[in-house]
Image 1 (cartoon, rainbow, N blue to C red):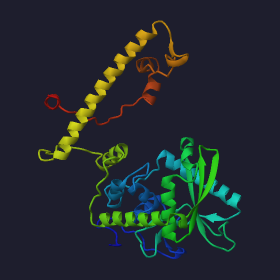
Image 2 (image 1 turned 90 degrees about the vertical axis):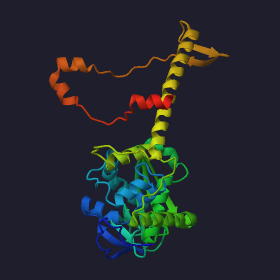
Image 3 (image 1 turned 30 degrees about the vertical axis):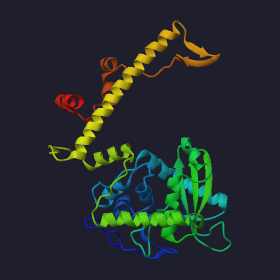
Image 4 (image 1 turned 135 degrees about the vertical axis):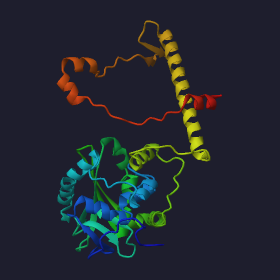
Length: 349
């Protein structure tokens, strides 16, 4: 397998001194964000491998491919979750060090000495592992997650964190990685991910990473599974084509024509489901008569619950407080799939 950067990709700076048993420093931790984003295009990182496997919240194998081959712009700004995770990272790292009576520091982007395409950015490196008596190094992965994700950490780390930490261990030659996780702002948990417990998975990760890098090197976009997250794909195609123009001939593109037919079928299903739902609601209200609830064997079976929500009268806001309206209300353009009536009628016939 080729271990060079794919044609058209930006080559990372040459790897420098060895900072872990099998990892060389590509960029120091204080490198600016644009240099880091550029350098990480020359390999598969720990967040990339989670995306390749389809367990990332932010990407998939196709988005990794387009990122590494330069099809996606460099993200100059963090998303809100990434921004606050980066801001809170230092405090969580300090707390892990305090609780474990250890010293941690940032290191930067690291590449494996034998497989330079295999990369990771360690959150923190630990100079003296608290699990050993000697001066053995290890690393700490830091995560901030919503409290609704707490169940994913009940018996260990979440699947995506497991994959990331094992990838980091394989890059750096560590036999374990620590994980410090803060859930919902005030629930701190820490874990140890040991290589010896996941040898088969590590082999699978390395194989998947090598295959993804080979596809990148040969400019062969990966074929995604049929159940790939559509939200991730919709975001990807918006980023790939922010400025659309013209028309494409799909006369011989049966795949896209089938997708249009499936879209129309799904639309019809939604319309019919909504009609059935309203009809059922009318029958429920008829059964309730003047009551607000109904029981079956003394157990509440259905009820009409009073709810409230904020509602803004935009017209009144514009009339009475035009400055506030101008400051708070803005038009945002978006693209909506439109299928001509003739095509819809032909499909439904």
